[in-house]
Amino acid sequence: MSDHKTDEAKGRAKEAAGAITGDKDLKNEGKADQAASSVKEKVEGAVDKVKEKLTGDK
Image (cartoon, rainbow, N blue to C red; front, side, top):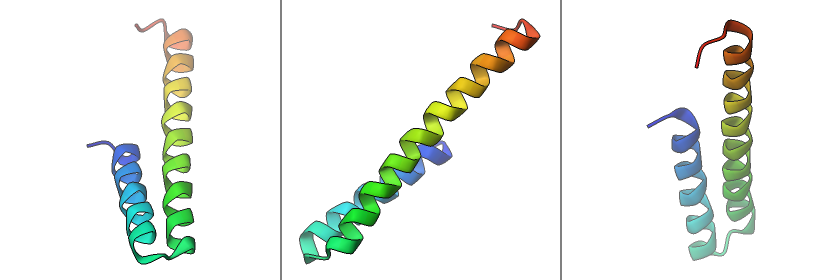
């Protein structure tokens, strides 16, 4: 499992735990972790595309 998928799973777990316990901070932290994971995934994809363009790899 890649790092961003692991981070996303951790975020979902935090969000669920926060929802179950009524801990809004934990729930929001989980949502933030998921958003950060999504951004990281998109940035990594963009970096890969740039590398492909620069090196001619496909």
